Length: 555
Image (cartoon, rainbow, N blue to C red; front, side):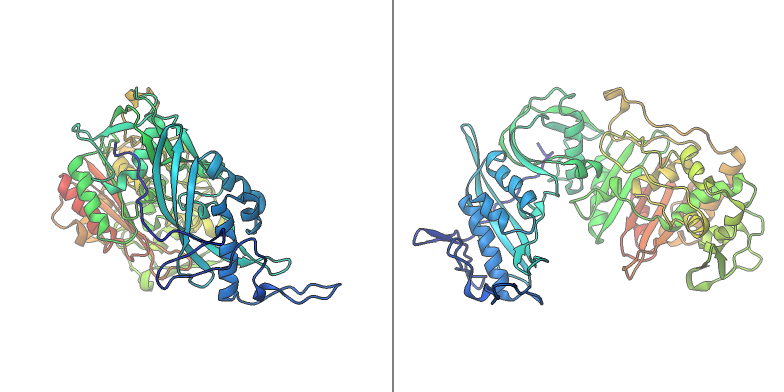
């Protein structure tokens, strides 16, 4: 079907049976443990204690402690001794129901657990089992891991419990269930009628999952039988879709046509694969149709659901606000000092550059932070929020594109945080879908909610913006972005794509990260795109070539 991903089977050595008791084993130079569950604690695990006082074990875990704790847990789990396995963790009340569910709800039988070589307190292990439902059965194989920690009360080594121990695709609160899927499969088509599969387009795995969840029943298909991850409250709040792990019987798929362009989608996949942690989205400004979405990491759809500081690409929205309020004009002189202090914070430009006697257009093109920070005192705390919502359709959590999205966040802030928001830091959060929409709004002159599936399919109502920019503001904003694409920080990436174009670069600092996230948003003709390369450096050098290549491909 192409809409769900299977877990690849990996064969490893099974458990040894010694005197009727099971030991978790591993071949080769692995973790070779033969400390059997049920035979009492290993000798070196005992701690001398007086009748009145038990010593609390402290210090780093020994290799023996890690082996013993891991073996106790894995052996009990494999034997189906759920209570004992849960007791070998630091959270038995959470571990017990999920371990019970792996048999009762997930219908797993003949479970074989094989430990690998420990790295410190972390122990990898493989799982082999049979998924059995009525007269159906299929093998399941995957790799997981556990970590051993000391219990605070007495220092006893126990498995640090998280649902991901049972299966790496589980988040805490999720469950494994085997049965009729509830949502029939779908065959997703591109705009030309070709089938979209995660094999052909690896980035679309989560998108196809979302399409199935949204349109499985509406598209007229019939459900099959499968083992799947059923998301809990926390995962649903994060807009994660259920995920199929094993399909025991195929359902009859319905058909859903998307707006994706096969040529642009293929090009987007190639572009992000050349960078670690890169994401990109391409839109049609005149309609809002999503033409491509790709992520170099295929486990999470950062392009649609990411929540990242957008850095200086946010200056597109801020500039529209300043021009609207008469605080800036493209060709008028505008201050760009080396530094500017506001709200107790001292803000800097890259390498503390300054522009003496320069225009606002020059400050935008060179991405001068202080040119924007210097206007913070003249703005109300909610001005930027209202501009993002009312003109660009962001930060209202009401987009309905056909699959889950994060619709940007521009919270009302004050003092230094308000100033930081003007340059895409502070509390502002975006993703490539949001920033591609910003460029599309500038190009088209009005906000069109992006969409992957036509609203006519399920009669949903797209989000709208309550007002548009004045002709004067729009004209100047386009001039700013065109000048940046021709002569500013975006010029190298956008070379040869003019004259009907515009762009803005961005770099967003992230705590604990040596290099900033590199951002780039641009339009050319009736195409708009945005991308981010996390921990990549300046946007013009990292995300810029990705976006520019796609604008050229689709041009």
